[in-house]
Amino acid sequence: MMKRLLTVHVFVTAVVAAAILQGGQTSRAEDKAMTRADIANKLDDALATAESLRDSEQEIALLKSAAEDVVKAVPENVFVADEFSQIEKKPANDPKKQAKQWRNAVKEAREILRFEPKEEAPLPEGFPELTPVGEIRLQQYPKYRLAKTEMTLLEGRAFWTLFNHIKEREIAMTSPVEMTYAADEKGTKKSTMSFLYRSTEQGEIGTADKVEVVDVPAQAAISLGIRGSANRERVADAKRRLENWLQVHNDEYEASGPLRVMNHNSPFVAESKQYSEVQIPVRSKNVTTEAKP
Image 1 (cartoon, rainbow, N blue to C red):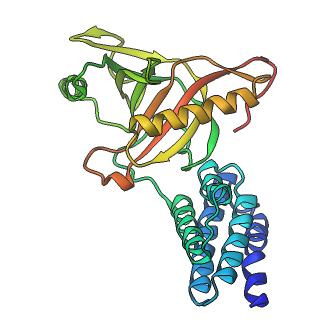
Image 2 (cartoon, rainbow, N blue to C red; image 1 turned 90 degrees about the vertical axis):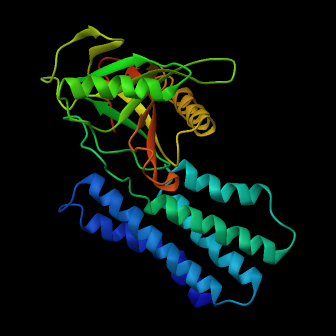
Image 3 (cartoon, rainbow, N blue to C red; image 1 turned 45 degrees about the vertical axis):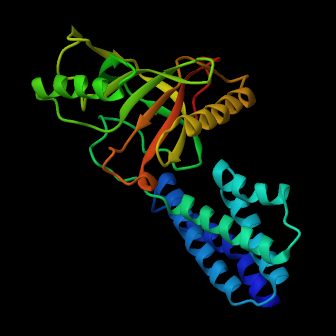
């Protein structure tokens, strides 16, 4: 039993060491993606070992050890950390029930780390790689062009207004669809919907038929990747987390624009497979400070 626990306890060390050894061959982003995938695979191993145990206390100890190592390996993933901290805050009195809670939490953490967004259309030129689910990143965006329209009570009307706009002008569809939000008594309210052009060389700036085409200046944004539909509850939760990040980094950055959601999938993608980035544009308080991703 102790040998099994030790094996699970040290798996992250081996994974991180392997990533470091390959650091000269792959980029930082590739290393990180590989690490997330490897950790997810190791969580499979931990779950398989736990299922072979007949003692709930031993199962809890094994899964808890694996969870601690995961949090150390990906401390920036707020969703993974939450999965495990919720169990610590409300432990079950029944060992069997608590073991089940740990199994479910480990399974959810595994899915978070393994999640890969479905790409339905290309990104605009120069856009950064997508923000991993559960991670808050400072992303750098180049200047880009978009066509926007005001939101109404009928969201579909805004979509078709923009769709007809790009169809008439033979502008190819890209991903994501950008939604901006305005504060209201319930927390967030959709303000505008925008289709992003592939390039700033496409189309022309101007206003016609309730659609305004504008160029968005190059900017930074703090971004949190989420899976599932970008409903009001998920957006509000992401907004809270991003605002907490701004409070922590208050000496470096401040908000420079409204909350926005980059929706990367159409309704044809299953809800569990949908992916979005919730973002707040920011600017440095010190022009001499270089932004670090």
